[in-house]
Amino acid sequence: MQKVLTIISVALVAGGLAACSQTEALEQPAPAPVTAQASTDAAGAGDKTDEMACLAMVGRQAKSTVTTLSAQPSGASTVVMVGVGAKSVPWRCVVSKGIVSEAVAAAG
Image 1 (cartoon, rainbow, N blue to C red):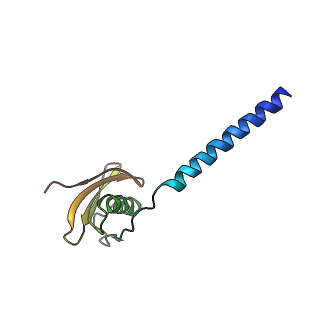
Image 2 (image 1 turned 90 degrees about the vertical axis):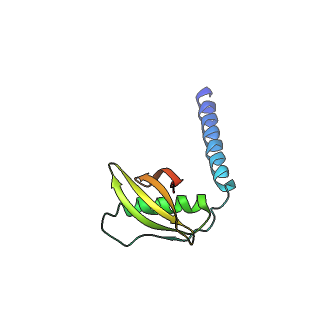
Image 3 (image 1 turned 45 degrees about the vertical axis):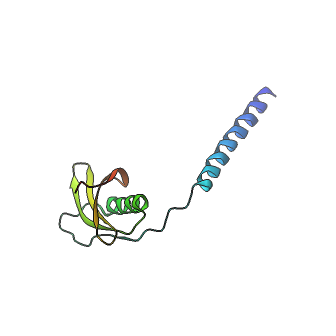
């Protein structure tokens, strides 16, 4: 009987944790719509998955339209230069396997 209660308790706790993480995911605000345009230049282009991850991240941070200025492999990462807004204000993004480690406005 003790084992049955332990199993039921573990199942209830696990179910509660799963419900908690689902609730947290539902409570997060929807990302702002972002217009992104990936580069079509194959010369020196980095991984397209990395490029799209950078465009999405910079678009969310800058809350503006974004376009790829350049994408260059750099060791295990890809460095993507992104133009933000109508004036293509430069941002630098470092990403590896779709995970952005840095997305900042580039020094002008």
